[in-house]
Image (cartoon, rainbow, N blue to C red; front, side, top):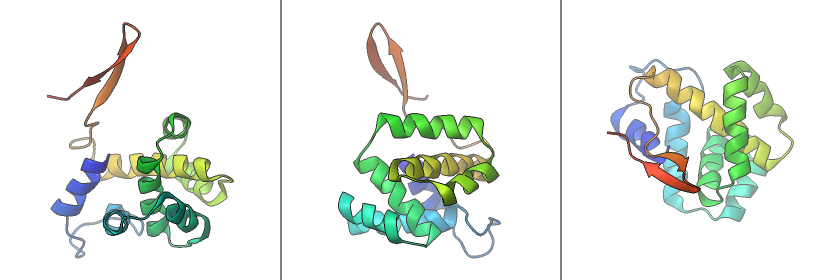
Length: 143
């Protein structure tokens, strides 16, 4: 997902010519990029997630937190949320999540929807797919 966000950041200009809603990729993509360059520690990101009220900053911090402290449970929960909820339901969960891990999972699910909506299924795909075969995990790179 990181490469997709970098591509969005470098290929899109948010000058009003791109039609996106108030909380679109340009907003959180810029926040993510700016925060990523600053090199926040995990504890600093956790403070931002706990105390910030700025949506773009929260999403950026959550994405960085997820990349620095990857958790199978968080990613599995994000996948379940994305598969079982609409974007409106996810935004309701965003405002009512009770734990950091739950909040990050909701953010990951929202970002999934935002990217799919922005790219209309044309340019958004997993950079590396993982498959389980013969009791081992294998990376599968797209062609």
